Length: 309
Ligand code: NDP
Image (tube, rainbow, N blue to C red):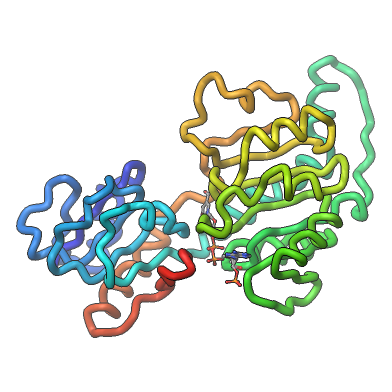
């Protein structure tokens, strides 16, 4: 039984070390050095080249190295019928929550105004924004979105959330469906996108939806670049409808050198680092999934190809 590791950003040495601690005799192969493909039963992947998983006759588990699996479903030669699992990791979720708090407080405490005043050596007191003017709307109430919503609620923010299925969550007003989305957006001052990227959520943040936000609202995207129509956001900010944005993910990554977001005074750009997978935290889940699949059981956090998440 061999594991094939394919990633354009994670360290194979780090993963091998963590996996070996849990499973000393592991046969670990790093793309493109496949060896005998008959041995490969598990693929551990992040942005594998298209077709990389197509000719592995005994593949029985495709394990994402991250919470998202859009990078797997985008492969036109993805083998069918092989279970696909995503990572649900408390350290990853913690980082995503931390990033959201950073972005929300950046807007809520008007950090950009303070930085501008400080750069001009101006002693400019900006009081904290009333909580009623920093109403939060979280798109996606899954592992990450729910933790973000609950943490912000625990800080005293008025929090609402949107998901596909109906939910009842203490202190969080929950919405579903297009009508629910429109209602939530109209009462949101800081919108946080924590959705998976699927056919249904691609380009969900466009003029149609973003213009439903009240004037001076703020957008945080830490999910996927393709959720946001970047030109629409820019137009709404430049027209003064939106106050700004805090963005971790982009249509094209790395964000091109000449992209207008870089120098925009109301847009904060970070290089897709809101939540990074830490092998030491996530390796046990991978080992457990290999064990489960080996005994004929479904892996933890298996995704549904019909829903795309
Ligand atoms: P989950 O699958 O746990 O949660 C997804 C949530 O989105 C669920 O609440 C789901 O609704 C909701 N949802 C899905 N489709 C729709 C839809 N069409 N309409 C309304 N709601 C919908 O995912 P996670 O919380 O673990 O992760 C979310 C995303 O965060 C990942 O897919 C990934 O892309 C991104 N991410 C980004 C990182 C970064 O560094 N920037 C790091 C980690 C993740 P329901 O509850 O009804 O199923």
